[in-house]
Image (tube, rainbow, N blue to C red):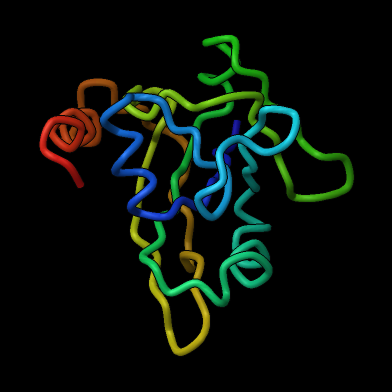
Length: 143
């Protein structure tokens, strides 16, 4: 099992925390055609940042998601054949710490957003850990 990643504009993530359902697919657009959220494997994160976000200077977040937990909640996850792309079949429950494994700000250096140099191993889910408490606090107080 490996995590999948979604690039989120920080303000979109903050707004959707209040509703507990993340629906901003890409650059402020609600769900992509077909009702899905785009995601990517760790191997494709830098390419997505270069292709879709290079010109954007708003703060970005990299949201690590547990695809098995999404499927358990009846949200389909489909890997695009022959690519690093993944389609999440609907809004993501953004306060579920079994689904949202990590949220980290991305760094912009010069004219380029940088994906993390190392992605954490998907070994520990944190329903009652610091991320769960942080997500709950942020949903009440804002980002």
